[in-house]
Length: 491
Image (cartoon, rainbow, N blue to C red):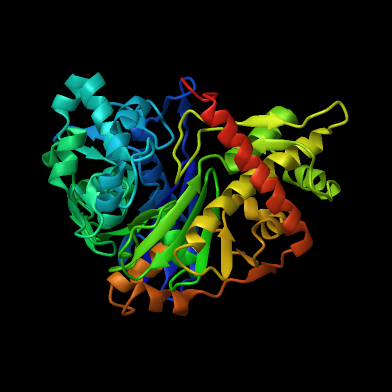
């Protein structure tokens, strides 16, 4: 058995070929290039996703000598949009999930938050794609009129491969337009956002076949036609499975460009909890609670670039910078470099530095930024803990390559933090979903238990430091409240 997984991230995408034991047979990676056009506009050329998909598959086949797969599973970032015509040709650039050009539309919809949260599992947000569609309708009416479908990135790649316009319910729950309980597009909410259902994809459950590789795509990618293509669910949903978050009690934390937390729910709560997002999970008939911080690894990269003048990040040097700051830093930072994420969305929020003196070292500022990012994640853990007991945090993503940051996380969280050594946890989750879809296992849970053999490094918190970080976290939250209530983030 040979299964190809495509994992499409914000700044890169990967293809990994697995056998039936979960052994990697080949891997290919390509970069995606964000286009920054000022403070709020972030786009990407949609053609790049197609070109990278073809290049990855061709490299996989060249490396492995295998051109026939049992299935191709796709997982991806979730809320970027591409308007396309009847043939699937893009009508504009991809509007990325971080883009906040739709913030005024979201502000006007905030009065509907109680109803939206009850129906969709989330309050209005600039991240979700529904309000991006509204923005196109209001600001680019010709594009809106000519749009046959609004696609997110995995839907676009699936169409390029199969010719089908189909999505799964995990992506539907990131639009703000789908009823979280029925997993159907909600007519009342569609009317509120002024988006026609005909412009949206057909919804299927994650793990179901979206379509089959066409003859045309087979020719350009050098694989066989007819291979089933599986919608595995969004990247954070698959990361949760890949981290082993398949039962209640544990939280998945992905620290990449942003920081994303997820915990499993077997059913919707009778009373909707405050402070979290509820999405459909990659495992059928389950839900995940989510919270996020928009700048996580992005904050780390900013430090490397702007504090240390690095054109290429020297991770070993930065690790030593963190290690020499073996105490809680004096500066206090609000870490909203790209706005504040869920649950209290605030696209206008920005980073704030306080408590800096002439004695403050560059390395201390660096550590204070990382402290603030993890303290914001601790805020979200507190919200999740109000709904379900949290016994351990399972962390993965680029920042977990740093032992100093892993220990810092544990100290700030006050919980054991297990760092997964497998850097491809998202792909592993997608593989589990795909193998269940192929009938090899009865469920993605069973598939994960059979496939997972990665090592986990456990970091135990220093509870005395944790108590001090709790005091600092309260100060950070209070500083944000003072600035926000005082109109410091007003446009």
